[in-house]
Image 1 (tube, one colour):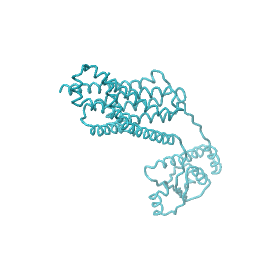
Image 2 (cartoon, helix red, strand yellow):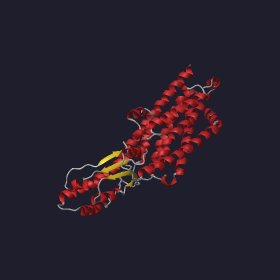
Image 3 (tube, one colour):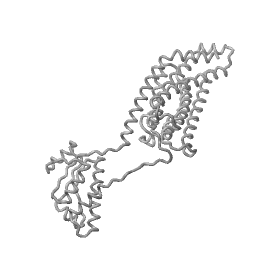
Image 4 (cartoon, helix red, strand yellow):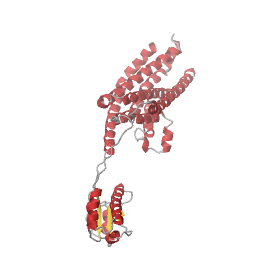
Length: 388
């Protein structure tokens, strides 16, 4: 096992520099995962926010007063002078996002069942305006039902009935198909960020070995030794697999330690299997890169380009649902895309029957296919180099 021991000595010599990268990437991954989880939890919870609007009433009536009281539950009314320049300035400087005008004669025409229109001036493409529109439509559409179906109803009676109807709330309960899902946001984001850190560490470590073995003097000494080429290649592959497993283990153990409460479940087992498959895929890509580059400076440049490039297009830094279809088609030719895709599916698993696991297993098979393809290409290139 002379080759195996030599590789271990080379890795041992590079441990200080690799530990710096491991610590930096672990800290970055932990911080980014925690930050993304915090943002995601804020996005999945709803809290009503009152927006500023200007309401200009050209008449007063019980119906308008009731409408104003109901609308006041979701907006803040800002007093503005009824002047074009003042209203335009308020919209421009975002003092208000919505100006609603109730024209004179609105109440009488509405109570007669006639078609009437409110006038509004808004900031384009403001999502808050949609919510305000829905609230206004809800109030007057409900009022119109009473006007059309209750003969002789007074404005006071109409407002009382509207207050009673619109005060009712509906309880919404989200049910899952199976058990209640575990909070796996942290694990999902952490394993996605593993693409960057694992790629970088494996490229640096494995390329240190490949560059050392590509040294002409070492090649000639190995060729003169009684060790067969097959034995050399086998020992070299074994030490690479060992290094890959150790790097993977260090990365995932921190995820478990920092997320201990949500780590002991079936989902975590699939996270670990998927990440281990991807780790060996990274190992084969790193071996291929090592046979293509010619110096340590080139390794650093290539590792940055490969790691960052794959992270940007495969859904690590930007979630896959936010990427365009053309970008996703390009990303599908990379193993990191299928790794992230599988992670996202694992995070949503509540049942573990084969139909639910089949898409995840298919993604893992694709990653294995990438690993075998890259490793085969690397062997061919290494063989050509050896004979040349």
